[in-house]
Length: 99
Ligand SMILES: [Zn+2]
Image (cartoon, rainbow, N blue to C red):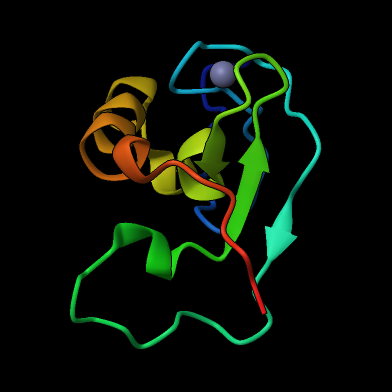
């Protein structure tokens, strides 16, 4: 009966739950933020954070996690999410000030 069920992946939908790549807490804290103006154009230092438009604070370890990692957009799995986090974002972990 159920053999033909198919699940379509919609990458733009945000249905994943928050998982912190730092401590694996599933409790998102305060602080989802949106930049109104899009990425800044300071490509000189190629800060990966400069293209982060949405971020959420982990309520457990207080890390600021880019939403595409915390919610694993585009089918990012948790291992890849952690890898990106450690490689690109962790060292500059900070609450960005959007103007
Ligand atoms: Zn955390």
